[in-house]
Image (cartoon, rainbow, N blue to C red; front, side, top):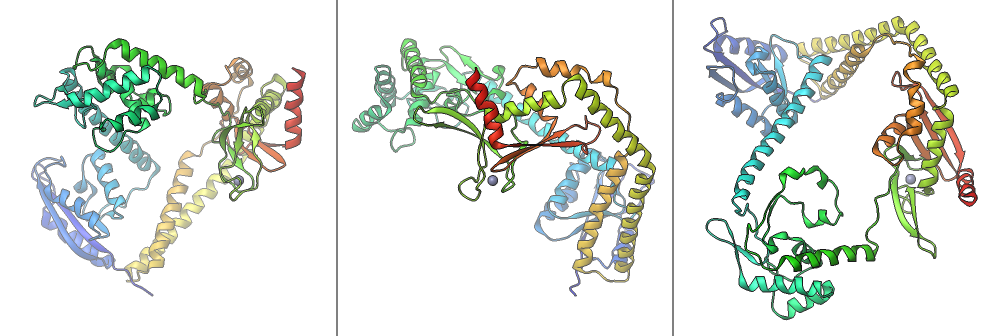
Length: 519
Ligand SMILES: [Zn+2]
């Protein structure tokens, strides 16, 4: 039996602004006593005399947080939680840091707070921390913007053809500028990338960082407005401009700064625009360009053979190279022998199901009635259920108390430590469950009847429609020869009301292929 001796760092704070506060000596004395009772080993003592309750001027506190990452101790012990931090915001942040370093925070006077409210508070505060760090990013951006407004280079390697002078303004590098001119002129005249790259190599031109030019570096040069004298700051990268990467939409227009004649031009505006035209024409011809496929069932569809999330897949099939979008298991042909399903058929089938099974006045009434029957059953058993959960919680608390007794007698084993962790997890789950338990309200059909017209009128192929549809789909599971659709018909009251509908794959295909023929 291995005995784990937990190592403790004590933290004490004496605030001179508080007359009633315990002296550091008294705090340490109480903590020593507590450690002795728990058979903990004291490995460090940190203490601050803080004039105010703010964290910043507590050097020892900061040291303790820093040391927590070094594996020197398992527990930080304070006399009272307000010694740790008075500010709930700070407290959550530092608690999170300790947790990340696998260090527990304990208090002599308070039992650690695992209540749902405090768990919730912690997550809200974590969210706030994130907000502040993003805001900080915005401040940095503001500074860069000021610099850019003076047409100063904001950092990094300047583009090919330019150098940066001592005032951080762009100046022309004559030799490199020749390469830029060649790239634009050749491209405008219809030369391909390979020909341009060959020419540049043969004439001794190199990219800014050396080596040889590649297609991507040419593309980004051909998209850079600086070459016609427009100083651009925080423009999306050329990859974004080609639509190959998403997410660039997040950048709002006001963050992009364009200043005409903000830097010396290397080529004319006419040449630049001619090149953009040719780029657009190329894109249309090569077939690289196609609209993004819309998958209605994304994130709700699973492989019944291997259990993986199923993904959308597009390929060009048959002799006529018809575009075919499917739902396809990601491990297909490697580990999984499932079959892919035609995306259009499956999406259409699910929409059809929602129409026939939920969104018509007859079915919707029945569904609401079913939810109300559930509400009645639930409410009738509520008392029993509540008592049961309470009882489970008592049992967990009792087990924890038993372990505390064992620990007080000096028994600390890894098994016990694991058990405590498990019990604490159970306890917080049960507490959350209790916290969320309440009697259910029956639904009124009149509050839901608008869903039928919503469903009919909502524009297909939109995010709004997908969200709507997905809130009535629990999951879709595909198998080699059939598909199972699980409708979620709890209407937000419960997730226990689902209906499974099964269709053979052949039937699904026949249904829609025949329809296409009819049209
Ligand atoms: Zn699979």
